[in-house]
Image 1 (cartoon, rainbow, N blue to C red):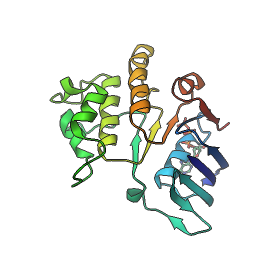
Image 2 (tube, helix red, strand yellow):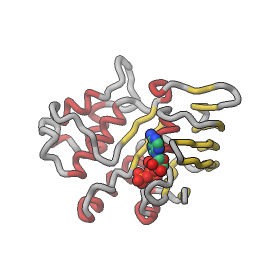
Image 3 (tube, rainbow, N blue to C red):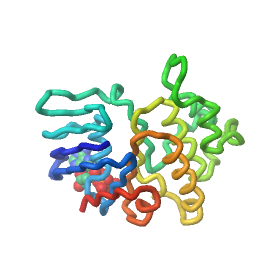
Length: 205
Ligand SMILES: Nc1ncnc2c1ncn2[C@@H]1O[C@H](COP(=O)(O)OP(=O)(O)OP(=O)(O)O)[C@@H](O)[C@H]1O
């Protein structure tokens, strides 16, 4: 499912990352600064590797030799950040609709199905400022899914939450993992979190 072999350079940071994995869901771990977010950015098309290739499923996102470098919007990546980054001026429903892919007649991820999947029906009219961290992350995942991605990238979605909220959010993440049959890359600096979501763990240290 994942065939990634890239040479990453950012400022003085340089690292070759190789991931060859048949699993649909993989986790990246490593200390702060190991390059986890940089790998997600490379997959999303936000940083260009110096060389190499990024192939996920059948899709070639980047291949330096073949001069393939899909622009970010054609990579069809759903990205969930550490902090949910919801829009404060919109309610939950507005945030979900914001990410919607325009004019698809039969979207793979429908609004009602996503709301049900993430258990956020009762939150739709709420402003985002007073959501708990875990609720905000569920909304952020919903927004990402409604953009009709082909790949889901999760950048430490648990790291800003206290232990109780983490325990609350984890089952939702597992549900998304099992029901949304997309390739997923889950980043965590805690190996324990990573093990909860994937058997395929790649340590970047
Ligand atoms: N735009 C940039 N310009 C220069 N250096 C950068 C840039 N972005 C990241 N770096 C450097 O690249 C290295 C890897 O950063 P990255 O954010 O990928 O690590 P990380 O493993 O995700 O860390 P964290 O767990 O703290 O988020 C760090 O040394 C960082 O300072």
